[in-house]
Length: 143
Image 1 (spheres, rainbow, N blue to C red):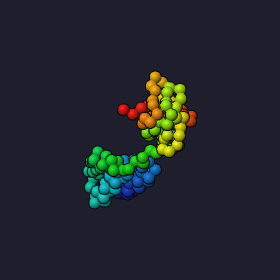
Image 2 (image 1 turned 60 degrees about the vertical axis):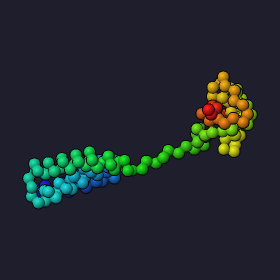
Image 3 (image 1 turned 90 degrees about the horizontal axis):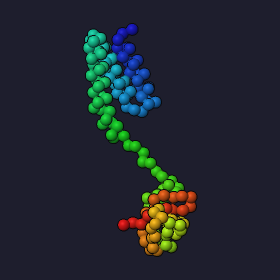
Image 4 (image 1 turned 180 degrees about the vertical axis):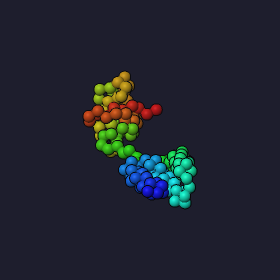
């Protein structure tokens, strides 16, 4: 079997593996194998083929892969349910202490407690939701 055929087979195997891994590394190695197959097809010796494969692989993994990974959009993590309330601001409807209170978060009224139990938050103040425990919002006054 000719050298270029082996390089083509390697390129195809790496390309298929890239489909399953989605790391961009195996695909770049596949491209290097394809370029090496072209070098082998024109009849250059095996040491030159290995040098071409090594240089193109290193160039791809060191230069191209970081650029590609930087431009791939990562899905933004979305929070749902009560987790989405953490970090939102709320309006104090009834004085909030370390034991009880009432706040309005996005149009809904929630029972509330002060995150710092020593703090008393007066009616009308704006607070941040720090945590949700069951049906109670733990809040801290905005400064």
